[in-house]
Structures are given as C-alpha cells and as structure tokens.
Amino acid sequence: MNTKSTFRTPAGRFLRHLVLVGFGLVMIYPLLWMISSSFKPEDEIFTDKSLIPKNVTLENYVHGWTALPNSFATFFINSGIIVAGAIVGNLFACSLAAFAFARLKFPLRKLWFSIMLGMLMLPHHVILIPQYILFSKLGWVNTFLPLIVPKFLATDAFFIFLMVQFIRTLPRELDEAARIDGCGFFGTFFRVILPLARPALATTAIFTFIWTYNDFLTPLIYLSSPEKATVPLALRSFMDAESGSSFGPLFAMSVVALAPIFGFFIAAQKYLVRGVATTGLK
Amino acid sequence: MTVQSALKGRVAADHGSTRRMRRGVSEGLAGYLFLIPWFIGLAVIVVGPMVASLYLSFTNYNPLGSPKWIGLDNYTRMFTADPRYLKAVRVTVTYVVLSVPLQLVFALLLALALDKGMRALNFYRSVYYLPSLLGGSVAIALLWRQVFGDSGLVNQVLGFFGIHAGSWIGDPDTSLYTLVTLSVWMFGAPMIIFLAGLRQIPTMYYEAAMVDGAGPLRTFFKITLPLLSPVIFFNLILQTISAFQAFTPAYVVSDGTGGPVDSTLFYTLYLYQEGFPNLRMGYASALAWVLLAVIGIITAINFVVSKYWVFYGDEG
Image (cartoon, rainbow over all chains, first blue to last red; front, side, top):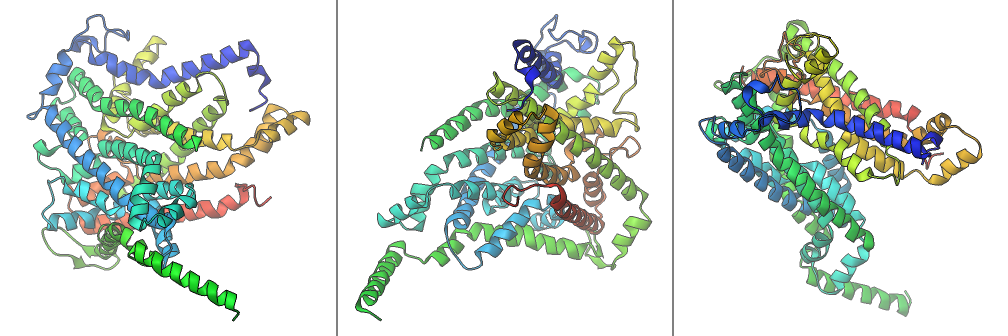
C-alpha cells in the first residue's frame, strides 16, 4: 500500500513484525500480569516479578468467589438477566425502527430520521436525573426494569443507525418479489429482511452484550441492595470490603469478570467473519 | 386522455388496490406502526426527561421535597461560587485535549503499520482491539489502580532501571495522566475504523505517486492524509463526545471521590456526586445542560473547521 521500501525486504519485514509484536506485548502485559498474579499466593504478588508463578494456587479464586455476603454466582445471574433482556430488547425494537427508516415511505420520515441521528450524539447524562425520578415514581428503583425496559423502546439509536445502513445495502428487488408473492410489510420484514440482516443483528447483539455487561453508572444508580448487584458493582464493593489489602482475590475476580467479554469476543468474531463471508457471496 | 393511458391508469389503480388489500395497511401507516416502540421511547425516555431536566435546572430540587423555582441561580453559582465545578471543568478539558489526539495518533500509526495483505494481520488487529472492548469495565479500572499503584507494575519496571517513584494514582500531579494512558490504551476501535478507511483509498493513487517518484513521507501527506481526512474527522467527533462523558475509570480509581485533591474529578463524576449522593438534583440538571451545550458547541465548531481540512473526494 505504502511505498515503504525498507519494509519490503525480508529483514525489513522481520523488523516490522518485531516492532508490532513488541508493541502488542506492552499493551497486553498488564492483562497478563493480572492473570498471572491471580494465581500467585498473596505474599508473592508484588515480590515475585516473573509472569509464570512459582507456586500456582487457586486460593484467590476460591476466596474471592465467596468473599462478599452473596457469592459471585448471584452477580453473574443478575448481569446475565440484564444483558439477555437488553439484547432481546435492542434486537426487537431497533430492527423494527430500522426497517421503517430504511424501507418505508411515510410522512415526516426525514424529520424523524434526523431526530434519531440527533439522539446518537445526545449525552446520556442529560436525561439521567429525570429518568431516575420517573423510574422511582414507578417504583422501579432497585429492580432490573430501568436497565431493560428502555431497550425495548429503541433508545440505543446507534443500533438503529447501524441496521438502517445495513438494510439499505440489501437489494430492493427482494422486497418487491416478496410483495408480489403476497407478503405484507410485516411479512417482508420477518421473512426477508430480518434473515438477511443477520450480520447486523449479530453485531447489535455483541455490542449490546459488551456495553450492558460493562455498564457501571446505570446499575450504580438503580441497584442499591447487594443481592441485586451486577458483576461490575460487585467488583467495586469487593475493593471496599477488602480495603485494598488483599490483591489476589481482587485480581482473580477481575479475571472472572472479564472472561465473558473475552469469550464472547472470540466466539462472536468467528460468527461475524462467517456473516460477512456469506453476505459477500451474494 | 388516450385509451391507452386510461387503460394504464386503470391497471395501475387495480394493481394498487390489490396491493393495498394484500398489505392490509398503507405504507404510510405501516411506517408509523413499525416505529411505535421508538416513538414511545422518544417521548417517555428521551424528550420528556430532557424537558423535565431543563425545568429542574432552574429549580432547587431535592427528591424528598418539591422543586423550588430559583431562576438562573444554579447557572450563576456554577461559574461564580463553585470552585469544585471549575476544577471539574479543568480536569475534563485537560483529559479530552490530551487523550483524544493521542489516541487518534496511535490508532492511525498502527493502522498504517498494519499493511494490506501482511501476515498475521487479523491477529494483530485482534490483539490491538481487545483493550477497547475490555477498557470500559470496572475490572480494568481496578487493574489500572494496581498497575500505577505504589508497588504496581509501572514502579516494578522503573525500579528495574533504578528509578523509584511513589503511587501514580495517589499523587494529584500524575493521577489524571494515568487515566489518559488508559484512554490511549483503548486506541483499537478508532484503529479498526482507520483500517477500513485505508482500504477505500484506490491503489492507483499510490502507483501514480510511485511513478512520479514521491517518497513515503510525501505520499503520506499528499495522498493518504487528505483521502483519509473524512475518517479522521469521524473518529475525532466520536472520540471527543465519548471522552467528555468518561465516568467509570475516574469513579473506580478514586473510589468515587474524584481525588486525590479532586485531580480526577471528571465532569460526569461531579454531576453524579451532586445528583445522587448529595441529592442536589436541580443543580445536577443544570450541570447536565451545560455539558450538553458544550458538547454541542464543540461538535459544531468541529464541523465548521472541518471545511478547511477535511477533503471529500466528490468535491474535488
């Protein structure tokens, strides 16, 4: 691509890989350090500087899992319920809205579409407080509802935008063919557009998972009782409970907390590549 | 009207009516039906609260009482009688001004280094992208606390070179910079966008430049940079908006206080403190509206200035 002639020679190519690998290692090193430390006995974390623990122990994981009044199983179940609800909500509501914006002609469409685009840039903090007042009037504070219900109302404009962009690339002839075959708008949406939009739906699901799972501010505001806490909230109170003295269990639980994102990333990457490959074949 | 056109009209009308029968509803109505959830969300979750928040920003409101109208008092207090607020503004602006350009420079450099068709490209891309996915989490913020802590990773490495430093998190002069590092560490997402942008540049430009004897630097400044400028602009807008809203790392690293000595008191953290633990919801709403206005103004400035440096191919 570039005329970097020095990188074209075998030695240059080797040098470039060396730099890229070295840089990657520096970036990943804190993560490796955390994983390695989580398997070390408490007194060796800051004294044993090697990445490979001399004495491997699972003590940190065993201790960390049950260190809070509720075990981390509770927090994972809580996070799981919220994430699952958010994914279903986003897939349902954002795809409906995206189909309307991408395919249907209706009065004031341009106006609504630009309002949707405006929502993309709206800082969440502007509506934080009245939203809290609203949900507390409804008696939803300290339930999962404030974290799930808004997703069923297509409030994540980013995903609408993403799906609109994707649906616009699908050939319109498909819709027309479906209509000639007797499909109504809802039939066209469910039987033609949704199946073809699977890559965009997968992307939506993946990012909803990561954002919702990582989200800290919303659960911090709405979930006050310890048994309702999500994984990030639990990790935070974990730090207080251990008062910063024992790092082993903290590292261990951090590793456990990051594992789903990591796993999802690996698994979903495959799905995404396949999705792109199949649509590329058309 | 000729017979032919009349016939055509009738056929079209028939066609139209049968189509309408099959569809059940007209396209215009269908559009609104599909948008029902979105409209409810817009009204109840977004616009309603926005209006309420604007009203509350002119009141003194504690959720235990009822809002009391105080006019512009919240806004004047912010700029004249609230040193913590001014400190939060300084901290946030420093953070945005440092972290956004640094992050974009790293993203661009790495995207350029990952040449098309090179070996293990996907592997590198994944490795560099991973921190972007993990970085927003509490776990990573906790890790950062340790990495830059008293006997953390950074000081271990420095100790190896004979340099002994204290906690980077605990020192108000350096704590903010540890958060800047965390943001730069997450350069993977803009890098992916840059990589996609670089793919869009036709190779013939590079071939022509090579034929004309342009060196790598000249090629970069005369071809890559101008043709990539729309993507750079897109990344700049996106990262600026999200940097203004950074919350989790500051909260976790400082235990929710914004300390030491308010050195990590991000704007959003101050807003949270005022609105929730301190229950000054009127004041917090005013803070939120100023944030919205600032983000709006900066985005607008970015758009105006972009006319002078962003190059859209179809114009030239």
